[in-house]
Image (cartoon, rainbow, N blue to C red; front, top):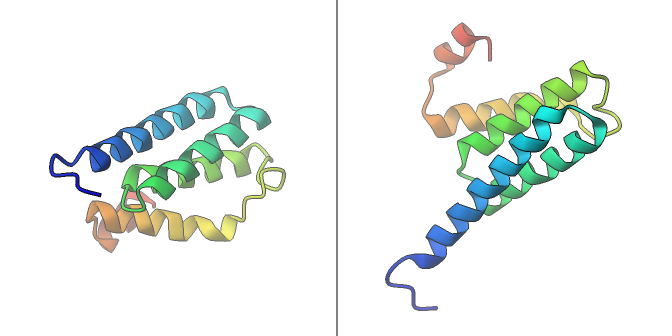
Length: 105
């Protein structure tokens, strides 16, 4: 497809941003149903753009809050995946390992 203006890429970034914002809106409610919706939105955001650090970081935070509230199992969350989510976000942001250790990530 010929797209000299880059509209396809911009449209995809816009969708990824909307999915991310939708995920945060659901995440703030902190119920099982809202966590399910947030997880789906964050996963869609990183599927649209695997290089989107905010989406990976949001998934890691959701995993933490789900575990804290005892919802991880019901959401099908494997807490063993959390370090890789944090690592993806850290790497995409260009943060060093020493930053991650200092910040507790």
